[in-house]
Length: 178
Ligand SMILES: Nc1ncnc2c1ncn2[C@@H]1O[C@H](COP(=O)(O)OP(=O)(O)OP(=O)(O)O)[C@@H](O)[C@H]1O
Ligand SMILES: O=C(O)[C@H](O)[C@@H](O)[C@H](O)[C@H](O)CO
Image 1 (cartoon, rainbow, N blue to C red):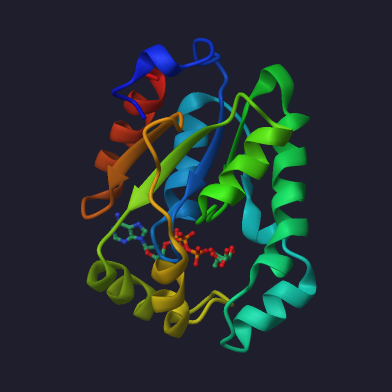
Image 2: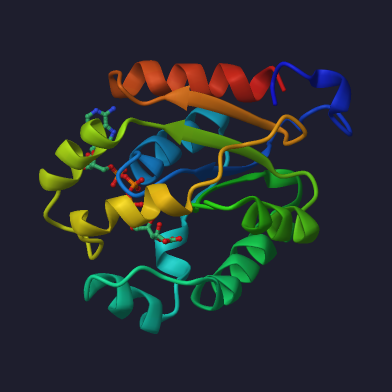
């Protein structure tokens, strides 16, 4: 992670390729869009890349399984791979190590921004959100699936129990320091 810069394959590009990861409600869409604007790169919300069957499954209160996620993760990886010099920030839960490996396989320069939050904080935020297909009832399954970043992953972790501007500043600074 950020404290092991010697493991970085190359300096982070000026317009980086970033996956904003974390469980539902962590703020991937909210923070991701603002981080992208601050970095001067496009933003894509990975939720818009899910096959309709995935959205319907989540909306019905069922967690996705690996088979549901693989085609979506390939789409996310392809978007990053084709981003080129313009950079890209994409919101994608990327909960398991193997999911992040699959993304890196397609787009090796990808760095990860993990928006880390305690369950109770995120549950409260999800209860206040009404315009989204993802039900708050799936939060426990999201935490059960989450595998924390490992030391060899090029990544930044930011705690989301803070005001939005502070989170964005910490994220941009952390990405710049990778
Ligand atoms: N730092 C914050 N403080 C207070 N509320 C926040 C903060 N960050 C996000 N929110 C709110 O929390 C809710 C969840 O945020 P958001 O939709 O960005 O999360 P998400 O990770 O993209 O969720 P999902 O994975 O389900 O799409 C939203 O209503 C958002 O406005
Ligand atoms: O891997 C997953 O279980 C899914 O990607 C979810 O996390 C949703 O995409 C999203 O985060 C909810 O809106």
